[in-house]
Amino acid sequence: MIYEHAFFPTKKPDAASDGFSLLEASGFVKVISPGCIALLPFGAALLHKVSEAVRTIAADHGFSEVSLPLLQKYDLWEESGRAAKYPGLLCETVIGDKRFVINPTQEEAVLDLFRQSSFLAKDLPIRVFHLGERVRNEIRPAHGLIRSRSFTLVDLYALTHSAEESELAARDLESVMDEVTKWAGLSARRGMYFPSTMGVPTYSYWIPSVTKQCIVPVCRNCGASYRVREELKTCPSCDHTEFDLVDGAEIGDVMRSGNNLSSVMQATPANSDVPVHVAMMGLGVSRLLQLIAENHHDDKGLMFPYHIAPYLVHMVAGDARAHEARKLYYALKRAGHSVLLDLRKQSLGRRLVDTDLLGAPFRVVLGNKTAAGLYEVRNRLTGESQETTDEYLHTFLMEVKHEIEE
Ligand SMILES: [Zn+2]
Image 1: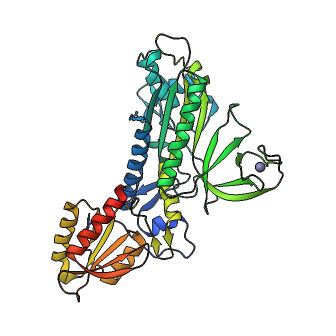
Image 2: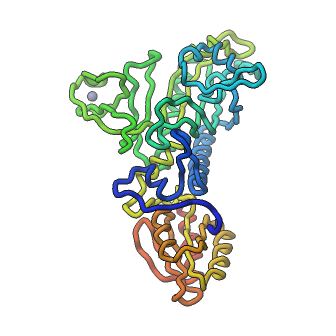
Image 3: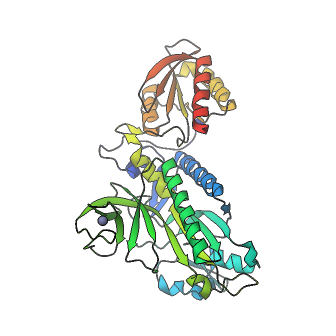
């Protein structure tokens, strides 16, 4: 991308920046109204990068992507009984005489899709996922992208024959969660909901976070963590009574949902009376953007690892070398690198400060005082910099590209 006309205002980050303030300072996001947050060009590019990683990992585990309508029939939510269960959480709209719920989650929609598709028992298991926008009537939006009214989520669903198969699918979903959080460079921890809501173990995934979206009791003896509604007196895994209370943020959860909902909705294969068992995973994709920012920065701004960075190279050129910079930009693009070229009218100094904020792994500077064909290349993660030639830059970036692909 050539940054000449695009819109992303930057400002100096606060000293004690959390992930969201950093994304705001770097021009990735803009709060439009409480709980409604716009992703500006870099924010959208980062969301795209994270989404592609999630899609790849989900596909590796046999999940196929579906794109389900934003509008779900209200009747479905009445049929499942969950319209009454979550009063006030659903955002609704009416078109003509039809009442709709605006996609808060997709269990109903997926089970409806299944029963309308005349699947046979032998077609199971079925694995699908949907990655997209969700809308919830969040009364108290807070913590930036962590709790908002409109957000991007991925839901994975495995429909199986039996509780045993469903358990295997749930374990696979836990692997998906582990792989995504590892990719994002986050050390996610699994906390059991206690008491369990459906009589089966359900796990929330959380990471320590300054957002304090949740406070998680962690057993001092065995390290198990729990998501609780009231204070925990003893650790269910080891009966120890001392806990550390850790500030955290939830990323998502893996549920063994059984077949209660599918019984109510009569989601059975066409040639069977047995309702399908559902294992599911939900993961806040837009939440990840904020937690990635919180965990990859220094006091000057963001610091993206190579594989996460929306742009691998951030080029800045003095006026005298703008033409040369464009040529280099297109050459690097042709070689398959993601490059940002900043040719705004701001001073070179201001644009260099922005390179630190925006966090691309490599900064390439074409200074007015340096000879044509020579560039300063700096690694944002190590701070090392060196003067280099065109040929060296190409070879070096190709090595980085191979490293990322491995
Ligand atoms: Zn314990």
